[in-house]
Length: 185
Image (cartoon, rainbow, N blue to C red; front, side):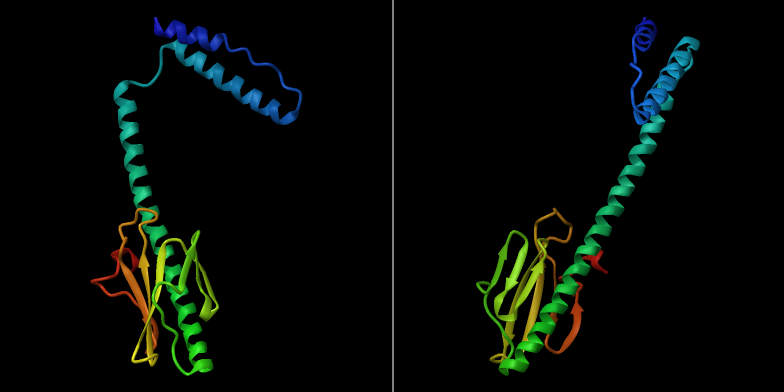
């Protein structure tokens, strides 16, 4: 009974001939697909339930693997952006010390974050990063500094709360194993 109703559904599909060429090619393709469906239904051929289940299992496994790879890839790119932003802060701190004789440091009140844009006005730094929060800490009355990037909860990452840092002694970004995320390596 379902075969007859499906056949009648396919036969009842009246396609109007289009006026322009692009729609004409789509029309021809749809007509070809409907004719193939009519032929398969009329011959009694099709896929068994077991074949459909196997195909769905294979598709779900491949989608799961692809999503895992994609989230890892995205997190690595976000961490690279944070590293670049820390390098910008490092260079701005070096310039600030040349001008003022000491490094710039403040509490979180000087690091303004609005709609994913982080602004550090005294250093003339604008960072477009909604995934990390940046802070700058000075030590020994401005003789040294440490800039820290902490992963936000935005994006629901496995690296939420993890951090990386750069200091006045070295321009290398430190991703401490106890503080850093395994994906960032």
